[in-house]
Image (tube, rainbow, N blue to C red; front, side):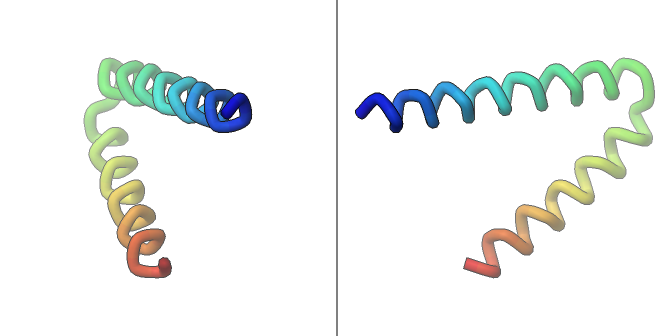
Length: 51
C-alpha cells in the first residue's frame, strides 16, 4: 500500500515537472515544442507496440 502510494506520488511529480518544462519551452520556442511533441508521440507509439 505504502509503496504504491510512493510510486503514485513519484509519477505525479514527474508529470508535474514535465508539464512545467513543456510550458516554459512553449513560452520560449513553439517550434521546439512541436518537434519535442512529435518525438514523444513516436516514443509512446514504440512503448505501446513493444508491450
